[in-house]
Length: 392
Ligand SMILES: *Cc1c(COP(=O)(O)O)cnc(C)c1O
Image (spheres, rainbow, N blue to C red):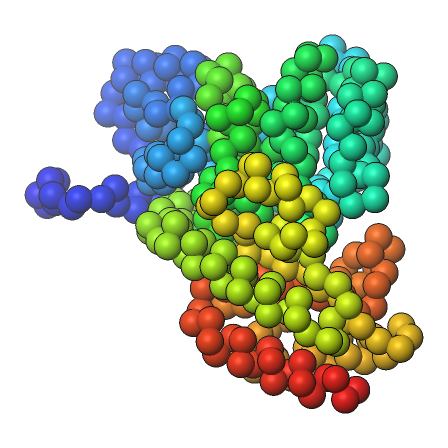
C-alpha cells in the first residue's frame, strides 16, 4: 500500500509496539528512551509514547501556552503523576494541600499518601469562605512544606484562591506549587504564566467537553519536571489511550467556543437565579455577592467567571428545603439531568448534600454545571420549575 496518504492530521495510531527494523536501531531507540524526551526519536511502545497522543499533547500546549503537556488516563492519574515529581526517598518536609479541593483528591491524599505511604500531610482551610493570605503565610512558615497544592476555583462553593499571592508566598519559603485548574481552564487563567510549577486538569471536563472521555493533563515549562513526569507515567502505566487522545484532540478544536458560551450562559443564569424568591443564596464568582468576586476580577479580568453555579433553596425548615430541591430536580429532569460530572454540553446538576453531606450538609443546595445549549430554553425551564416550587 502507498504509505504517504497526505492526510492533514495525525492519524490514530493504535500500535502497541512500533517496528524497529534491526538490532542496532533497537539499541539506539532504547538508549534514547532513557532520556525521557517529550517527543522520542523513535516510537517504541505505546505505554511509553504514542504519536497520536503526542499530537494531542501539542494541541494542549497551544491552548495552555506552555512548553510541554502530558496526557494521562484520568484527572486522578494526572494528579498522581504531578505529585510523583516532588516525591523523593529522602523527602522529609511535609506537603500542604488547600482543604477545598476535589473530593477524589482528598480521598487520594487520605488513602494513598497518608494511609499507604505514611506521608506527613497538612491541610490549609479557608477562614469562612475566603483563604486568608496572612494565615497562609503563617502556615507555610511553620510547616515548611516542600510542595503546596490547590485549586484555582474550589468545588462546590467556588472559592477563588489568589493564586498569584499563593505562588509568591510559597516560593519565598522554597515550596513548589501545583495548581488544579480544571474549573477555570486556560480560557480564564494560566497559572504557569505567574510561576506555578505544574498545572493539572481533568480533561474529562471542559477540555473534552462532551461527557464521553476520561482523561487528564499535566503541563509545565520546566524540563526536569517534564522528564520526571514522563518517567513516572511510563513506569506506572498512566498513559492515555491513542483512541481517547485522538477524540480529545478533535473535541478540543471547539474548546474556546464551547467554554465562552458556557461562561456567557452561566452569567445570565446566575443573574436570573439571584432574583428568585425561593433561592436563599447563590455562589457564582461573577456575582458581586460572592465572597471572592474581587479575586475573580483580578485573575480572570474580562474573560468570564466560569460555568459552575451553586445555589441553596430557601425553606421553612430543612425538610421543606429538601422537598423543594427534590421537586426541582424532578421538574427539570427532562432537560437538566442529575449526572455526577461537570463540563458537559448540556446543563447538568448535583444535589450537594448527597455528595458532600458531612462537609456541606445544607439540604437545599444544588450545584449546576451550565452547558452551551441555547440559553432561552434553559431559562424558560428553570423559571417554570422555580414558579411551581414557590408553592411547595
Ligand atoms: C473531576 C476532577 C478531578 C478528577 O478527574 P478525573 O478525570 O475524574 O480523574 C480532579 N480535579 C477536579 C477539580 C475535578 O473536577
